[in-house]
Length: 454
Image (cartoon, one colour):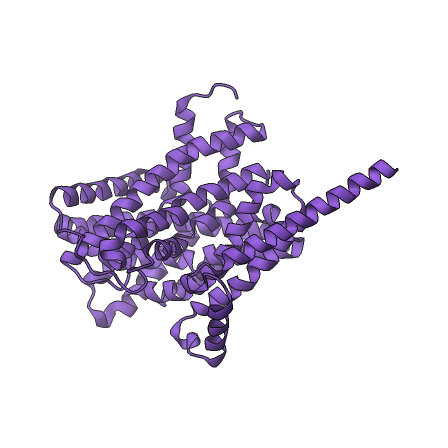
């Protein structure tokens, strides 16, 4: 591999950091720290595995398979499956969950604490209307003003975050050793932390937008697949290491906050409380401003990627139509509130993440079995079964109480290994992978025998 300036590693590392980290990512580790209490360390390990390592592996899978995105990566399973998976991932990152969250997170952090409860609904309505109006205007006109402002204020947000961490270190809220752990974090803190990392959606984002990083690496003159993968791994470690440090500090801060505050409804409220504690009214104003701008730039990236990708797949429908649809639906869903969005996104993520993890693993290991679609298909088919039951298990209360949901969960709990801790898919995926490999090697042996006989 030719010698490459260290500056380029940091350049791509900062791109990866910017792609995966946003203001919204802070609400989950802080809330995780509150839930885990004294067991925050074990929970942090699980969260870092799914929230930091998996996104990096998703980029490596795109690089190793030389894919242009989710569709190409999943195409060995079948073109129809690849299209369905692409739609589900983009819908999750787009108008169903991630994009609406870009409006509700800054509202919950910077504005909701200062609005009386009776005006919260109308406040969110007005805020989200203005928010998505700005997103639509600058996205449809492809104007870079907001992104330019974001490049200036996003680092300011990180500086503010660093100040809070520094003040927390100098003047801690108290010890974490005696803090109570919520249900699920007393004996299974690591696995619960791993599942909480799904909420960042960064592994899905890596699959969807990973080609952006690969293209940037190629622009540096690195073209060979092996060189690209090695460069991506090294620069990726730089980018995700910084994210990991921020996550770790946020989880610890969340656990410490229990000395002064109760477990919050969501991490946005917890971050607002901590900001006010250390920075007062000035912190409130800064948090509201910086979180809004940071999430605006994130929202623009999401809606533009959604509209471009779907216009590419369905060229008869214009870019502007997809953009309008995304912004309108995101606005409507945002008004359900942050807690509701998180509640309804959980079962969808519990369904998609096992499929995404198996696809990432297949992509990374595919050179070992010649990218044989038999291995892809068998692994995915087996993973799909427990993924459906994981989704049902995490239904919101209104659906979880139905007879069908209860029967399905009882069945899976009785017959699926590790289902009770959210990992029922692992044994199924491994079984499908092994069967796929057996089919691959049998087919290769038969081909070799036929060639010798000929």
